[in-house]
Image 1 (cartoon, rainbow, N blue to C red):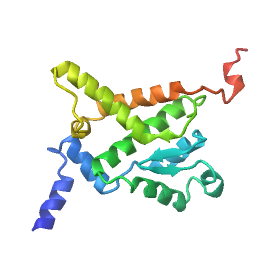
Image 2 (image 1 turned 180 degrees about the vertical axis):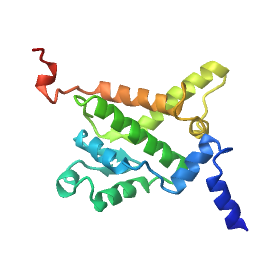
Image 3 (image 1 turned 30 degrees about the horizontal axis):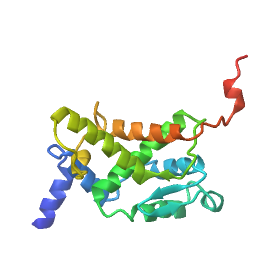
Image 4 (image 1 turned 90 degrees about the horizontal axis):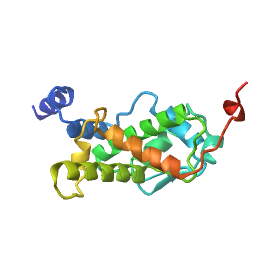
Amino acid sequence: MILQVLVQNIYDTDCRTPLQQRQIDGALNRTPKDFYDRVWEILEKTPNGIKLAGYHLPQQPTLSDMTMYELNFSLLVEQMLSKIADPAYRQIIVEAFMVVSTMLKRNPEVTFDQAANMDKIIHDSFEDFQRDVSRENGSEKQDDMRIFFNTPPNVKHGTTSYITKAVLRTLLEGEIRFVNEEMCHIT
């Protein structure tokens, strides 16, 4: 009976909050179908690797020892994600990876100067969110990230917009390198 209720709650998405959805997705280790490919692409543009929850995934020798589609690479990414205890935080990190990947794809001339610190990106996103909420409600900042996790991703003041701003700031703090000089020539 308890199992039946749990299974029904997992599949009953109509009355679930964004926080509950993230908790479930994070606990079940759900990722978008091309997630690992996108992490690989981020790693290609991040000479100093990716940092997350005290774990460092170096660019080299990872890219030279593995291929994008290799199971060992997916397992390495999962090992990094397994350092996160909170399922909702794990899921917001997955969302942040997708945002970073999209931004790097759309701007091929941009790379990370330092390691891509995913925890800092989420922390900066949360700080911006808190500043806006405090301004709107006249309330004090709180350390509880559940309010942020309970915000829908793809709305005007959703988590995706705050993550995007944090990634932009991080990228703009570094150097922009032109990968292909011909991109800038007018003929």
